[in-house]
Image 1 (tube, helix red, strand yellow):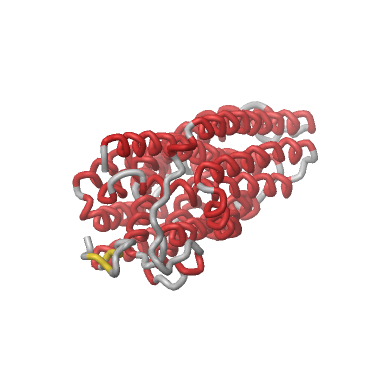
Image 2 (cartoon, helix red, strand yellow; image 1 turned 120 degrees about the vertical axis):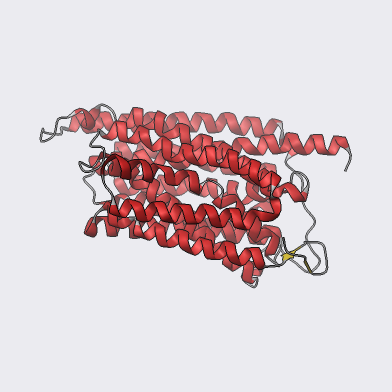
Length: 427
């Protein structure tokens, strides 16, 4: 490949990375929103986790048609369409708050997540493809580091807006008036209007650099980019299960972190302060991805073992949190983010390498598996309602332990080179 092609790929990769930042910011904005909605609508943990159910269920519903949409429109047009869908979802939120309707908030979150799903199906394999194949782990992990930058910034900014003033300025036991509820609703509106404006600007940016993104990888003869073909690949299914578990575990912990740190037996701080501290959980993932991308660049052939080590570390921390209280448990819980860091991109690329299905089909199935972020947080909420937030950490502990099993199996599996006649030597 000549220097001009590499230069174009680098520019395209930089453009795609802006998408990772934006959907990371939006996804984690849901965490302080959960704490706000729980207080405003007086919800149980299970009811509050329906926000994540609505958000991540979009991955299950939209991933299949997303692959067909991308095949029809191409990368750049699909990305701009997805951004438009996300803007529409953001504008539903003010309508929901004006009507004082929790169910309409859930609809808005589903619409926003539908756009993010399309972005995921486009951007993850695109980031992996924009450069030499042997550096795919590095590129996707590096892009995910910018995703984590968005997740680090979001709790700081969003918590400072929606968890301050309004009903959150009322002392314990005092009356919450309609005016105070309206003030809290307006703060939520402000956040989503700002996100909508940022998405419009991002769409204009993508339009300006659209030619850099319309690159495609050849599909093997006889293969179709339908997710149905991925269901015939054992490794595509195995990878989908790992993504399901990882996203479910990560989202469960992050979603309840604000309330967890707020608990009297933990840090006993205000929801606003607790919400801002959640940035350390997501910031740990950012630091881990920066470090992890460097490690993967150096030891690309050991990616499965690096994944196993990180997943084992996360499982150990979860088990520790079930037994401890106070500042020690709080900081251990926040540290789980560091170990989450490389899991998604490494699971994704390990699966792409080992799946016998086309990359587009495998990517679609893996994005569909992100529905774990809908299912496991609800189960987590049910456990928290019945046994407490500490006991709920047993659920992600089990999920991380199963990811260790996936990583060990991947280290022994053979890879499949798309465009070749069969599997290549495993690495």
